[in-house]
Length: 563
Image 1 (cartoon, rainbow, N blue to C red):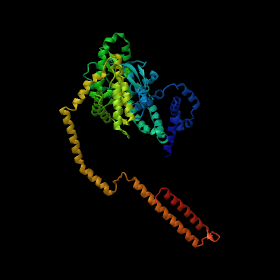
Image 2 (cartoon, helix red, strand yellow; image 1 turned 135 degrees about the vertical axis):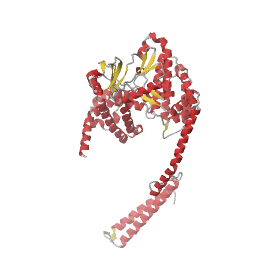
Image 3 (cartoon, rainbow, N blue to C red; image 1 turned 180 degrees about the horizontal axis):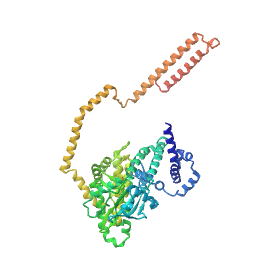
Image 4 (tube, rainbow, N blue to C red; image 1 turned 60 degrees about the vertical axis):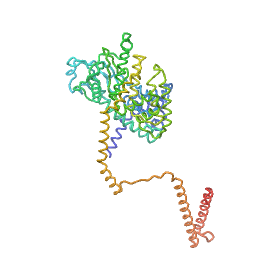
């Protein structure tokens, strides 16, 4: 017990510095109210006057922008927390969701000597036994890892994604602090319970565990490469699993240009229209055909290779939609295109987890308004990003909680639409999606699919019939042993129950009064001291109390008009 307490004290002292840093950043960005309600500035000894002065310097920023900047300043754990919040449409207002989806994760690079030590620790040998050279200047640096170009002994150019040496400890400390803060928020600030802070921290813990394990990203790259193996105009970096570990990823070097540089080059104008069509086609295939998609396809993660060929980079964030989710999404899009608000509403509900409050009629009305405002406009004015934000706002207002991967898909589709429009402002992505939507609907009617669904339903029914006798026997056994009971709920009996309660209370009150009167009479008859003018004082007090209580009961009965 003592050892456990000592460990807790050591952990608290270890977390103190980082706790002060976290709270200071949020105070700087104007979140003093929550901090003060949790008494954090006083407990951590923070200079609130100086932090208030710093908060005035960012006063002109909007609240969503303040939150985004605070999360970016605090590093990878908080950037990931923001990404999770942005994917939970029922929790955050649309303007916060939109701002948090723009979170950036760029930091100053570490010295090469620090990265070199990690490389050799992962290779378990000097790096010169594997590589002829490693560029000391990184290609990019983020809070979890930084990237260096290198050359294998076989003279093949590769890229090393190397994890920062202290990142696991930093994330573990942050998660420990956030877990304690989440507990404080849920117990002391009632309005934060709708965010489910503890559940968010647990999801953050799971997501970060996958993100700092580079073997997961290597698997994503290999799966993405397999599903597009027959696409001639797409390249995915090759992974070298022999040299890749949980902390270092070795992949092929892609000698191309970033999308921004490609767009700045006037000589690429003739290539842009076919490239826009190709990019839209690849994104639609990811979503509607495979269901496994790149969840962060911003221009920085897209390279243009000679040909031109497209190349996706950074497979740390991927999303997955089941066949049923893809079909419901397709049904939603078709219904919206047909201005069918009833079918669109049903499809949206099928895509969502229902909240506590539902108003189907109001939801259909809002859906009709949403369709009219967004889909009866010229294609040049159409913006999928705006439509996605409004759709998520609609789900939030009606307490429909859509799956995080579906929100990630909407965000990814919006990013891809912006890139496609930069390549070709006249490109009609919705028209391009029609064949995919048609195929998605036809797949449900194919004999093989119908047979498979029938067999699956038959298997489930057979399994139910097979286990039903055993389940019934178990249930009866629980009733016999008193481990189960039936609770009956009667609706509409509240007035009768209230009347019975009043009657029983008055009867009990009258019995108490009668008992008090009889006890007082016995005390007076026995002349029990102390006496006042030869009359027992206790008996007199009893009669007086009986009179007062009896009068109060009589007035109560008369006031309610029921004698």
